[in-house]
Image (cartoon, rainbow, N blue to C red; front, side):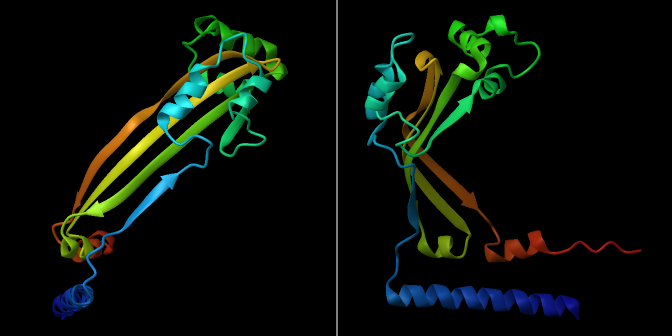
Length: 200
């Protein structure tokens, strides 16, 4: 009885999704979802922020100079501030790493304690869109997603408002194709979420 009922439920789900798909096809809707992940910043490209970062000179660039480069957590969004303790947590990640193993600027920061701070930049400007077969995507049998854009992250360490250390990373050109396949489509979620009954 339960098997028949389960089969009936599966057929209802298939019928439901088929009708939805047919309705969309009738309306001529073939556009798949798309969106973006943009962290607000004054820089419009990877090159823009990299040029600003590369102009920073160790033991010379001041906090006022950083403000002129739009690196100012008080006026620009999405720039975090961490203390010397945060710097320690990021670079002294395990007991095998000693203070003397670190860059001289980081050593100066940790020894300076409260007169040290660091700015964290994590800038993301990416866009994604799904493409491929509309019906397969709608019924979750196959979903193809393309992501494009750029990412930039950096840490800038200051002691007494003078930059003593900087490090950057990121991805100048993000171009990712992702494929998610569910052979059973919408029914697969039922099998994943169904409770497992253990006989006593």
